[in-house]
Amino acid sequence: MPSQYLPPDFDLSKPIGLIAGRGAYPKLIADKARDTGAQIRLIAFEDEATDELYDSFPEDQRARINVGQIGKWLKALRNFDCRHTIAAGQVKPGKLFRGLKPDIKATTLLFKLKRKNAHTIFGAIADELAANGQTALDARAFLDDQMATEGLMTKPSEKIEDGYIQHGIEIATEMARLDVGQGVVVRKGTVLAVEAFEGTDPMLKRAGGFKTDQLVFVKTVKREQDYRFDVPIFGLRTLEVMAESHIRTAVLKAGSVIMVEKEKILAEAAKAKIQLIGF
Image 1 (cartoon, rainbow, N blue to C red):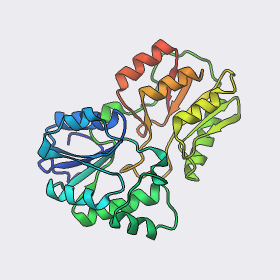
Image 2: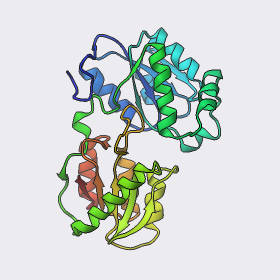
Image 3: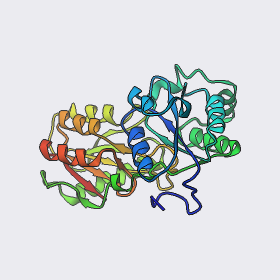
Image 4: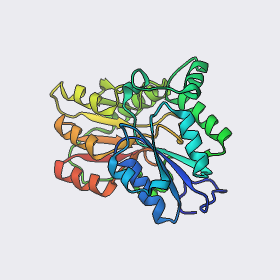
C-alpha cells in the first residue's frame, strides 16, 4: 500500500477524483499520488484551484466547476470513471454566503441540514459521493512524509514552559470539540486568540496585534476528526504570517496536521527562528 492512510481494499488501478481548492496542497497531492502510479482526475473549483494545477492535467482528465455545482461534480466523476475521491485545498470562507451558485443538488443538500458547518456539509457530500459510486479517501493519503511528527521538528529558538504549552493544547482541543475552530494562540496561561470561521492566518494577525512575546500557536483536530475533509494544514503562508506577527512557536498535532511542502517549511522556519513542535 503506497500510503498508511489508504483503506486496505484500495485499488490503485482505479482513477481518483481530486476535488481541488486553493493553495499548494492539491498540487502536492497530485504529484505524490502520481509518483505511486495512481491515476488522477481533476475537479478544479472555479476561482479557487490554481491555473498551474489545472494546466498540469490533460484536457480529457480535468473539469473546472463552481464549488456549489455538486451535480456537475458528480457527473464529471462518473464520466472520469472514478472509484475514489480525495479533497484538498481550501475554499474562501465567505463562499458559503456569497458566490456559491448552488445547483438543485446543492440546494437540496443544504436545505436538509439543520446545522451548516464543515462536519455536516462535508458529511452530506460524502454520502452523495457514495451514492454516486465514489469513496471519499482520507485527505492525508499519499502525504505520509508531510505530516507533523512528535517532538521538536526544528532547532529550539524560544524557551516556553511546558505548562504553558499544555494549556494551549487543552484550549485548542476544547475549541475543536465545540466546533469553533482548530487553532488558538496563548501566552503564559492566557488565551489571546481563537480561530473561528475566518481561518488561521487572520487569527494569527489578531494575536500579533498585542505586540508581546512568548506567543504560542497551537493547531489540533477534533477528537473524532473526519479526515476525508477539513484536515488542518500548516503551510508556508502561515509560517510567513507567524513571522510577521512575531509568533515564534507553533505546536502541531502529530499525524494530523499536514505540513504542505514540509522541507521548505522546516528550512524557512530555521531562517525565521520559529520553532515547530509536534505533540
